[in-house]
Length: 103
Image (cartoon, rainbow, N blue to C red; front, side, top):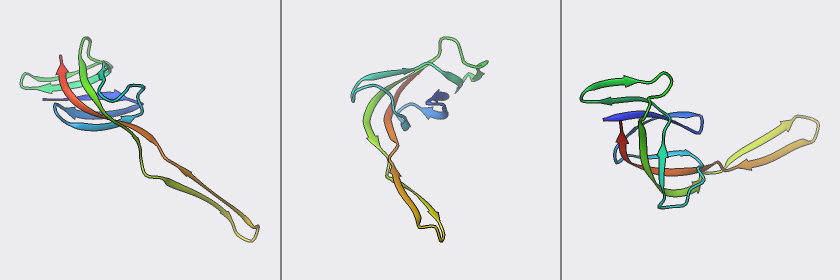
């Protein structure tokens, strides 16, 4: 059984027991999260597709970790003009463990 959910403007294919990383959510480690934007559910009975979401369906997950990805460096350079700019960015994320898919 798997589901396609939307979180942080991105769509994720998730299954029970799976660990996924989503855009940062405002929850503490150990808290339960309810993802209610379920776009598709596939199980033994068949496939249900929402228009755009499935009414009453949700995915229950637990926050495992709040963190940041590796630093990405941005470098701007103009030849012959003595212009150089270096900046870095670390994108925050939330790691979730998918506990249950409720239809």
